[in-house]
Length: 204
Ligand code: MN
Image (cartoon, rainbow, N blue to C red):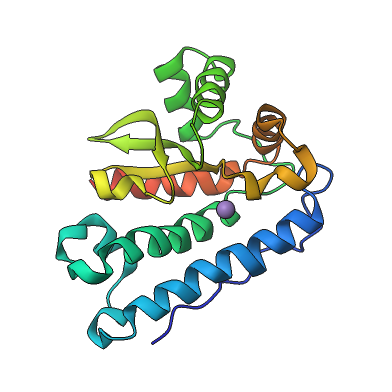
């Protein structure tokens, strides 16, 4: 079975004026699709791995045959990271009253402090990568990964993640990654973050 591009849960222009239609269209139909195509090409000679859950493979990369390990890490990571990211975007959702908000509040002291630490981490990624809020042994942490690495390869469960590859913001925000991070926080889907948080805790 081949991996397929998931449909976005909204229209390409739904996140305007924060994320523009052209970037969303290219990011989804070209960048994400390319990760999927390259993942499928890598798995082509290992039909039994086409049936395996991708996150199970990324959790234990050493279980993936060596000749395709980097391809699964990069393109498989690209596929699950983007699938995760699209669901985390929605206009007009609020963290109010949610468990994730209470947990962030008790970890960072205030929502504003969380935003600052998260934004600084995302702005500080050198080159291409991601910044994350993860659950690490039951504790909330902020971390970054290079390229398309996913925290599950380090035994951590992602709750919130921001793509800081230039392809995700350059058309609109140009070199101003911090403006893009600010816009991301405006359209962060707290309902989905709450789902991710509850699932991460339940999975422990
Ligand atoms: Mn991307």
